[in-house]
Length: 327
Image (cartoon, rainbow, N blue to C red; front, side, top):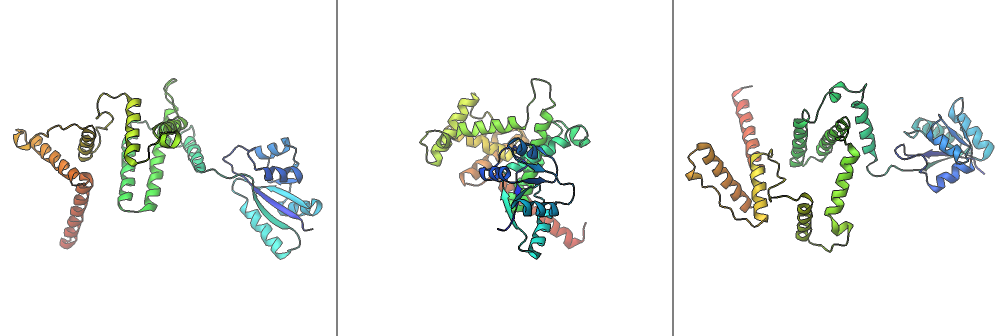
C-alpha cells in the first residue's frame, strides 16, 4: 500500500480548535510533523495527537515518517507552505511509488475573513511603534479624507470602473477602521471599537428588515421601504421629516433630499418665488431650487446633471488649451 503524506491547511483567522471531523481523525490517527511550535501543535497534543518538529529539512523527515507509519500529516503554516508542497510534488513526480501527496483543508476562511486582517493591520499602524501619522490623527482631522474617499468611489461608479471601485471602497474602509481604532483611545466611558461599529450595523439591519429576519409579510419594494421608514422613525424619535439630513451635503443634493422628504410626508410647501427676492443671492438660490424641483419632476438627478455638464465644460477648456498651446 502506497504511503500517504497529508498537507493539512487551516485558516489562521479561526480559533485553532475549529477543525473538521475528518481533520481531527487524521491528526489523532497518524504522526504529525510541523515546521514550528504553535497554538495548533499544542491543540493537537491536547487532543491526543503526536506532533514532532523535525530538526532538519522537512521533506526527508516526511518521507521517512510516511515509510515507517504508512501515513503522516504535515501541519502547514499560515500561507500553506507552498515551497514545501512544490518540493514534495517534484520529488514524488520523479519517484511515483514513494508516497502519495494529499491536500486536506482542516478549516476554511469564512466570508469576510480578510476584514480581520485589515483590523489587525490597522491596530499595528495606530499602536505605539506603528505609523506616527496615523497615531497623530483625530476624527476631525480625518473628516475631509473620508469625504474625498467617498467621492472617489462615487467617481468610479460613474465611470463603470468596477476594478477602481473595489480599490476605492478599500480606501473608504481604511477610514472606517482608522476612526474605529482612534476611538479606542477616547476617555473611559466614551470608547468604542470596530466591533461596536459592526455590531450596531448588524442590529440595525436585522431590526429594519423584518421581512427577512422576522415574520413580516412585506413583499413589494414600496412595502419594504415603508417598513424601513416606520421603524427608523420609531428608533430615532425625530421631530421633523427633515431630521437626519446631513447639512453638509452638496447644495443640489441637499435640496433634492429636502424636497424628497417633504413629498414623502405629503407636505405641499410653496417654493420661494425668485422674482420677489430682493437679495441677488437669494434670487439665484430660489431659481436654483426651482431648477431642482423641475429636475425631480422630470426624473433627473440635478447633482449628476450639473456634474456631467461641468466635466464636459472642463473637457472643452482642455481642448481649447491644446488648440492654443496654453499649458
